[in-house]
Length: 243
Image (tube, rainbow, N blue to C red):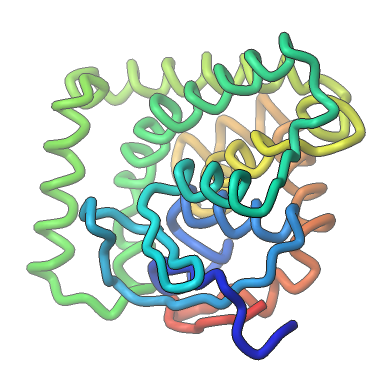
């Protein structure tokens, strides 16, 4: 790796069972690995101009939002991880990503709230910050709409999303065959949170009992693009890593 990579990935500190508690940070970092782009991590709580994390700097220029970061790098570096997809497959991949990021994500977050102590113990944040963060998240789920459902209804929504992904994946290695595409990074970012970062929740139970092919898919993605996975996770959530 060069001594000064152009991409600085700004994300929250590392997590204990996956490199990030944020599916969007894991999506972006996995994309960088898939595209073989050199990068350096800056693990902190510093937010982008849009008030969100993750974000990145490319050669000093700040870019906010994980998907806009991907699209920026595609344009800047002439990258197309979807080059092997047909127009129909590109449309389907877009729809799957949007379902996962705009719907399944909120289900996962509400599921994670079942075991909030697991999150609390891995970040050195005071109780007021944690309380405020949880309050803001729940308020956002109400604004989204999904937070207006009962817990059982949220689990039903999650199960239907997971079933759709499971059926579409089937026995394929990646979502569109033997070669991964851009959307695999996004789906992996979301799915591995449910598989590994929601311990003791109904979400973890659901994916392991009913959708084992999604768990196996996450294991393949981890093996393929994260050979240093164990070095990028930590028991206390404070380790930073560079690649």
